[in-house]
Length: 404
Image 1: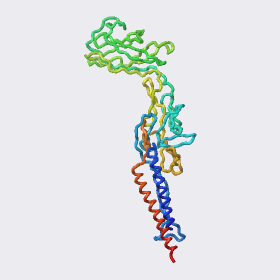
Image 2: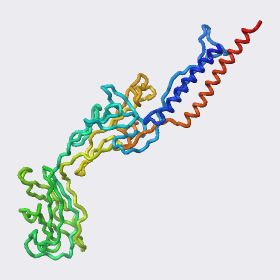
Image 3: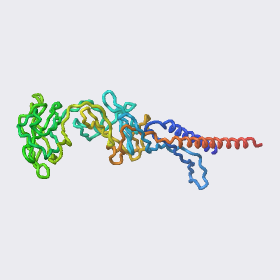
Image 4: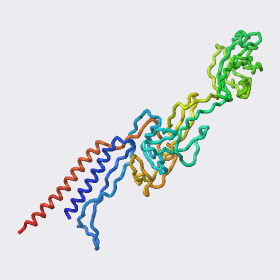
């Protein structure tokens, strides 16, 4: 009996040292989770049941349990590095087999797919050409390298102040005669082919509290003049026009000859101060090429383009399990669904019980190296103590054998 107790203790201590050694070896492995050996005592079954004085026959390693606690997060320079701050796993696909990992070291392959070092594809929700995330089942995420299509200008907004003390020019408008108008401001607009056109609005006072608005495009006066008339009340607030007015400019036959957009001047004022333009906005843009991308906390991969626009290219999907310790470890920082893990719950980062993701960051191993070294000393002492138990029983047996 004593030999069996000591032998089981030696085996258990050796297994514990194996677990500790594995933890120490993975203390710098991104996304690695520490494990611990869990022990249970062993008693022999008796036909009539065991009494209070039964002596155990040793110890057994009941399980090797991984601890899915949060690891520290460190920043990197790779825009595709991602760290989960909370619960959840990245969902990957390797040759059709679904795997789960906390290692967020991803890169882009030659086809634009987001993969890890083992070549497993990161899965998520895809985006349509307009940048809208499409739901449904997760698919391998691919970064589209296509240029973003141009958008013709449909609306513009101009915020400015006209000097209430200005004097009316008193002569017909001419864009090349600066004395025929009081003030002007310019904006860039885009046609359907993404070409930029310079539009200038000119403001000429016609009478007290009344102004005429003229226009030119690419240095050529527009055929319909004036474009509109502005009227202000005694407090300097705009009273007319009541709605945005239309501006039609020539853009070439290949873009439809003419394009029309609206100009909103509802924020214009007429105060006793010099003319000033506060803000000009328009909703068009030219074509652009992908210049970079990053993921937000919701896992949406946002592409940045050379024309200043951004567009969603896809969304990372995370998976959560009722019992993560029921997952089956596969190596390479990956797990597969196990019988005791439960079904995966999928969703976007930051939704439900899933944690948000941090771009350009990685989750370090949750191994406490100092604690593991202390545990190693303890496990070594336990091994020595069990070896001493075997040695002592051997000496007792030798004494009995030598009796005469």
